Image: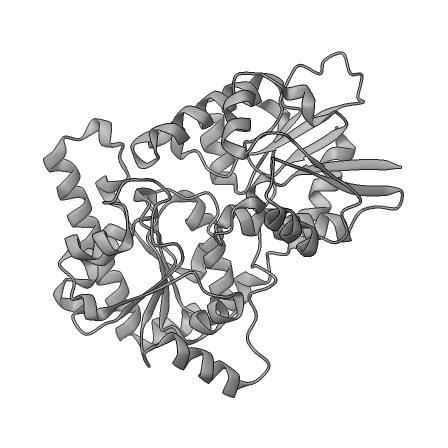
Length: 402
């Protein structure tokens, strides 16, 4: 029996982050599509009873779960220094994030292999958009991954290219994409959907975003866009965590709304909602906006495609790759530059210019029926390109190749 051991640290996050959805959906299909004679085990950082129960209930096909003695943050501090990497055990390991026990296995003679997933390169290219702790961890781990990992998985060719600008992984670098979350589905009846929409307080017409307050997500310039004249009558609905996951009180959705100049009555903040409610919000939106300054894949883009919702994205390379001609693309312009190369005034000007382009781009889609219709049709076609089952097959093929 061949055992693939997947590290599921992202599933301990109770927020519906892209990393968590990626880990859950891919692990589910890796289990379902295991070749004959293969099984899947999990490696978890130290978990609370509720967290452990959530993982076992969401992934019942796991044959075993190895739980380590440290929480994710403590484990990350140890592993980025090369400490305690052997405590996870050996074998065939597939890490769903950068949290991986990478070490020298050159003498293992094929018995051990460690594959690491790198979801974006923000810490390398735009460190000012991440917290100092995240930058420290990710850059240190990437150096270890470059030295010791058996292979590296990127979600898009864009991320693979960006990684290659900093590290030469050679043929160890593979691209395995994501897909729409399998749990984001509409309720059985339209009446039930109406009740969910009423409970959420969804207006008849609105633009939807999943952008959080984290700087790289681009919520600040998007809110500024809605304060501008062309969108004076539009409503923005914000779904997802309302903070950037740090102690910085300025990085909350409420603080960004207050600083943007937009009328707060035109911004509906829903916070974290159920998967079914997400489906209802997506399906009824006039458009989805993904204004990210940096991105690795953009799961909401594919999730909007499945409902035929027009998609507007920034020109971040990964978003352009995923959306192709099915998304209305807005140039970030100088907002795409590293802040280190801009002084304070230039940064403010860059964000203001980006907000103006977002304003025009959203207004174009809302005001042009033909454009919106084209995006709806193209989005449904584009959605069919992405399947978690295909991604899982690629995972198994990668480990077989190694």
